Length: 478
Image (cartoon, rainbow, N blue to C red):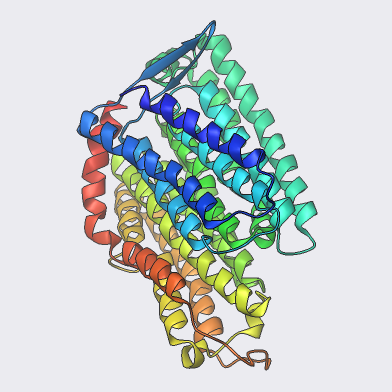
């Protein structure tokens, strides 16, 4: 069973070579189904591993190749991200199943490369493997933005992503080599108890540099500037994958590399994290209100959500950490839905300027209902999974410091304000410019995708607590 991972990587790289050496410039329906077979193979691997694990144990696997080795494995924490990865890639392939894209060889090659890199990162069990996958995602992401970007500013956006990411990688490498010089090992299981023997000042030094390196991929202010540019220039599927799974690398790294490994540091750095998360929420929400591009407004809203996650990680209770994980997972459903909807608008009108839209509730009822439900999921409406995550963080924060709980309420209202404007300006407010001369409602394919994501986001609160109990033993084990 352990060799199923080798089987997957062999099939994946074989498909990449097949795509690269194709002579046709455009791909038929058969090529898309050939790519989907990789996703279904991964689902089969998940099924085999879940049956073997019985959701109770972590598997640690070491593969040797001469003097080089890397460690991979699946535990409960990484299992959730793998399911999210598989689901969103399947949805994206279905969304583009009939689209004919010029230079689609590069497009398909980049998508599958991102898929392999994300898979490799989420199953990593040592810092070296994590760092390789963490940085390799940048290469196909660069090509997606620069080749298939929707506007003329795409070249600047692509290189801006590379520069800021490499800037953050320098900090991560400093923390990376500091750990290796101190411990002489990069294995997560070994580091989880070995790092506790270091002095608090030494742990804090390593923690700060790792945190600065992860800030770029999360992203957090002030290293967030690449995200609105990337979303603004990327095609719809690129934005969906960027918001749904690529950005989850940063939050996954925060929990895997910082929370699990430096549990003692949280006690005296928690207050700094809370202040930083609070400012991140308020600042990003206020910037979202001023945005004219709907995509950029949603991108800044994602940064505000990450501020809530950082606040949850700043507390010393496992209860709040569960809330942060719940927000991360369910935000990976709501945010892609919003970008799918914005892409639907852009395909019809060629613009994302929020002042060009209005009164869509009258001329496009199906789109308006899906937009309304998506925004409800984005504001953590009661019943959604995000609501369960935020109320969990809020309750644990009240136990730790009631004043901080009150501040979190004010930050949440700032997040609510820009979402309210997003609904009113696009759906209900009368349009200020006579731009909507025609509008045909969403297609059947779009309706099925939007409905599926809306059902998962709106009713996710019904099984959010089961997710917490699922994670409880996994967090204790890790």
